[in-house]
Length: 172
Ligand SMILES: C[S@@+](CC[C@H](N)C(=O)[O-])C[C@H]1O[C@@H](n2cnc3c(N)ncnc32)[C@H](O)[C@@H]1O
Image (cartoon, rainbow, N blue to C red; front, side, top):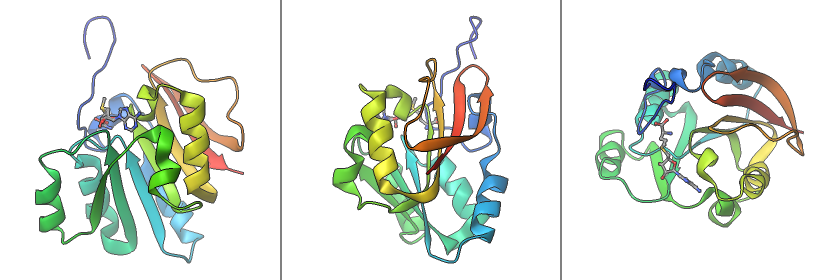
């Protein structure tokens, strides 16, 4: 964090991203999984090098299908894919076009620490995230801007304002 209170993040681990996103997502995911029988899928939108995904793989193993997406390919991706034998899949794409990359109702969790915050149109990015989330699925995001007044199609499960606005939203 710099002296003005701004905090930058490039490829934070889950613990490292608590600076911007001060909500522990692992217990929230465990309680979701306890109520779920289907194969679950997680997307880290703006995953950069994939460090948070590695932490999630250490926690959940292969029980969750893990995906990462960024605007470009990152040099660490092939090493991770090789090391853990394809348990994490990486994609290049835009938040604003998630529905072109993934089927509807595909993910149980979408997490984005300062990723979706960069969308040129946040409303469209939220709409697309909603499309590819299952009903009841969770969108866990930090926004480096004031949050919109409402999140159409979602209910707010949790909110924490730190250096950023952080919300956990459930798809209605
Ligand atoms: C500030 S970094 C955050 C990295 C990481 N999530 C962290 O916590 O350190 C922004 C990431 O979001 C991605 N990104 C920026 N705009 C995006 C967009 N419109 N759609 C998808 N990803 C985007 C970038 O490629 C980069 O991976």
